[in-house]
Image (cartoon, rainbow, N blue to C red; front, side, top):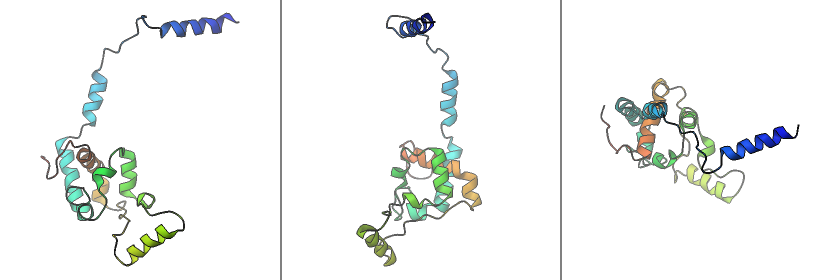
Length: 159
């Protein structure tokens, strides 16, 4: 009975020891195909840009940089995956709006600014009921992700 754990430990230690040949992955084609499939195509970027200009640019600016008074999406998109983006784009994201939680002077001051219209509203409309946004939410993600990663300049992308 004691020999089985010792044998397993010996096998594991020698398999990872320096100087012992390790298996190498030589077929990188599936990984390369997956990476290529994840790259946004020009038509997808263009469709995302169009939806953005129609539904988002009035608040977030035509270049998604917050020039319209809304959030700078180039900063907000960094590290944001597609699933989280879809959740935020199709539903309100009140928890991420920067409104201090609970009671306190900072929260009250911000609420006073909002009521007096000295600050822009902190909520984004929920696009869940908008058929155009629903149909093109992944195009919108591809466009904004490409802009945020500096893979796409501001302005109208090629079709």
